[in-house]
Image (cartoon, protein in one colour):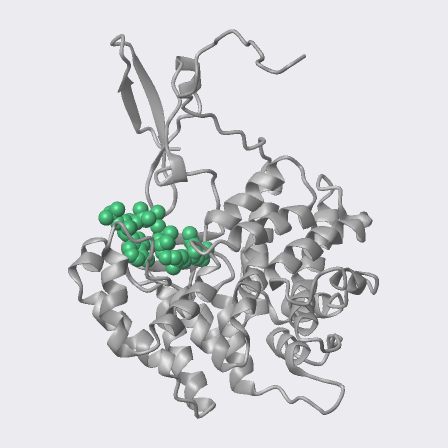
Length: 427
Ligand code: SDX
């Protein structure tokens, strides 16, 4: 808290003094919690100017294009760390010692199998179900199997549920893919890395040995790091809201998956690839850029723009480098990458995008890398959900550790005033 205050002058010239709270980084916030006592609410649909909570996990500076996880810059984590170490940092606040990391990695590794009966849940879905629909369903259903870690008021239950979710999301994600192509599920292997195990469960078959390509393993690990957490985005806010009612962790994460699925959020990577495929050649780009600027056309450039970043998304920079590494390793020349690079160049020099500070975001390049790895676009947001699970859990855990009130926003009511009811129905 600071000793700074703001004074609000009300209609009847009365004034209200509100405290200004200051964080370690970023904007100060006006504490409006007492405003209701003066008969006023704040109005902020979409929460463009609202801090919904206090957090120590991730800091974003949209103007400077800065992203810190517990103070560590994302570019340094993506270059020098690995996903499980980043998970430890997000969940515990500090980088692990070697011994702490080994214990953490062993715990995660030893919980990657799912209850054998859960595999039958997959068979209740059509083979052509969108994998995100399956992930929503199966993740929520974990609460039906793991009764012993559902009391959110017990810290040990919260810890067990966190490890179960972190460990089992890759297994369930790979099962979504295997089920969709009619191949048998592949069990997790304890001798592989988190990213390597996921690739093995995605692409191994009983017919021959599948060797994980170390370049693809590193690229997948980096994609997971870049998607791990991102402050109070829509899906994380959904998890916090669900968790504020005391809902069990599996239900909260299922709610986060549902929110992430939207094309304005985590579904943008799949939508970006579909857009690049629809554009298909560099010659078609001007028409699509025209449409993106046309207010009467609902088309938007997927993978561009961000509520917070009004500068280059620092994750997009790393994703772009990774994209080139993977395509070079695979000896692939991807026409879509050519379209993406030209689209980026055109948009970054177009006044419409410059004025609105619309830059490529994390979703712009990830789809091209995942497609080059042989992963279908329907699985892109599933991989985003798998990576973001640790961020959702970290915020859910922080909310419980700090103590919380149920999230219950108010509204500006513009409906009917009271009126008598007369039914027109025949008695
Ligand atoms: C993610 O919040 C997070 O942190 C999310 C995320 C995370 O890690 O959790 O970073 C992941 O969701 C990244 C964003 C992925 N979404 C997309 O790529 C979809 C395309 N982008 C847009 O839908 C949009 O940019 C949003 C939703 C991302 C942000 O929208 P805002 O902040 O609500 O901004 P806005 O819609 O008010 O747009 C401001 C202006 C408008 O024009 P004007 O009315 O001022 O004339 O910019 C225009 C918009 O029309 N605009 C675009 C555009 N994005 C915004 N015009 C064309 N193409 C776009 N992509």
